[in-house]
Image 1 (spheres, rainbow, N blue to C red):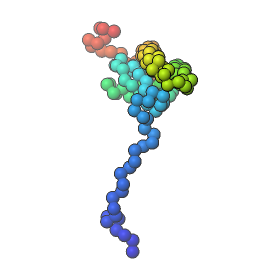
Image 2 (cartoon, rainbow, N blue to C red):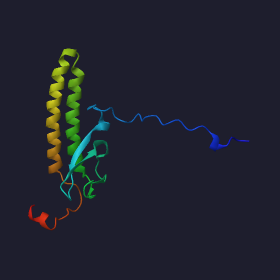
Image 3 (cartoon, rainbow, N blue to C red):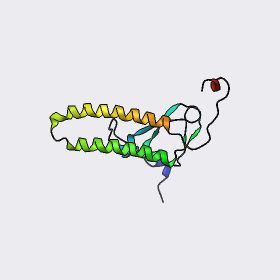
Length: 143
């Protein structure tokens, strides 16, 4: 007769997922985030870059409005990420001497700051698909 499943030993706890990005690794695409601005409430929120594709629906955490990237939006964002991270990876791979690492780190921080500013600018410029919500009440007076 089969053993009673209620008397079976408890299952071992699940191992950590191998898919999770290492904390602080800027070269891991699983950890990249993209700032976007809600078309309804004009507040900024971040979406994972790995999910940012044309037609994928994101929801604003502030107003729960939908945000759907268009194909031109996706292409501009992808081009920005590919050019920045491609350039930084090439420069990182060229470093063979350990004494050049601090100079690379400083350059990387400066480039990363400029890249984040570029993403902020793209978030304000690009508008997703869908009807814009017209503001009502006092908020309409200040737009």
